[in-house]
Image (tube, rainbow, N blue to C red):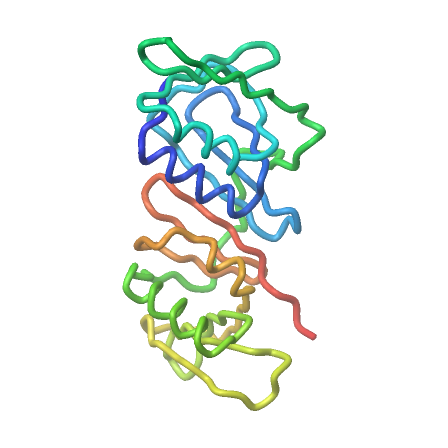
Length: 217
């Protein structure tokens, strides 16, 4: 089995959500944060022949990067990484499933959203840049006076600086907050965003993330 550059990019992104990963048989990757407040799913082009788990994905990818044209063979206790000429290999030990946290299901559903909009890669990059400067700990999506807004937010900060960007129009009044540390984990691409009462869904092609909303204090 070989992994494409796009698949390796997704795996690297998922490593930022959880250091370990269960590779299920088939064409889907998934991950879940240790806090269980964020899950990610991706459809990939490769067919994973058999289930295996890796305890430290970043280490695994770093070793993989030392091979010029790596090929993976899944054995009972190891994932064997070898170059196409078979002159060198690395036997990376698989871990037990109880050593990592992984999503039990292969998808999540929340019913009907209160709002939908498109978040461009440009707007995504802008809000992440703004919050890296302002140090706001949260992103808030809200419906206010007909506008659908994305804002840099600080629930605990009282009256603070506020950054707002109008994403569209809505006839619904709502406020949904997510932690900036989770938002920053998303890949910088265009997203179709769905806002629910207790979560946000970010979907882009073969990628799908769900981030749990912060509760009211």
